Image (cartoon, rainbow, N blue to C red; front, side):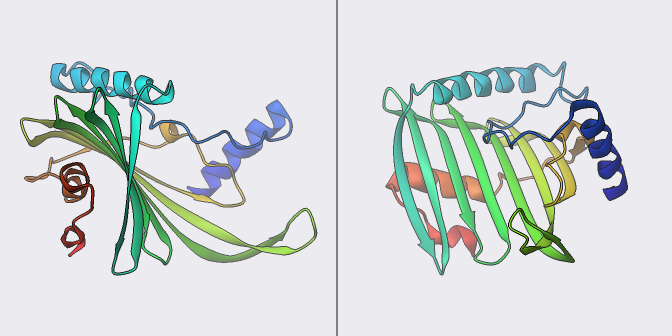
Length: 211
């Protein structure tokens, strides 16, 4: 996979010249793979997700932050409201070591309809390269997983995931370069959905979620 990514990077550099600065963090990409098109339930959820993202990016939502510290695991759950009703919860925390977790929970009429989660784990790969000041910088291998849960009537009706690996010395590859897998939906909602719900209900996070 590293060889493939390197070859793609070389081709891009040859065709387009110097690599541009990284783009700002964008909303989670909407998958267009054939596995998720044509399903009325999924398409309806995606339409509502896009509507909520539009409200968020245009500053039409009111934000309330809920900070938490669960046995050293520190994070923040952002509650985003439209007309006093939560439509989006953005959660982020790290485990204090080498893993960062982010979630986006989307709600329609106060009911969870979609969860987009991303897990980034990294480790040193044993290589170094000089930076612009000549200092040796250690290389890092990033393991990125993205998970999409489409939810109807409190049950996951479709579960999609995509995983890829890339080096810190290379730009993050395009997500579409890696296959989107359809997996068996879990029998219960993802456990961090309870984190979001406790933040909504109590303006604090129930740390038992992590136990």
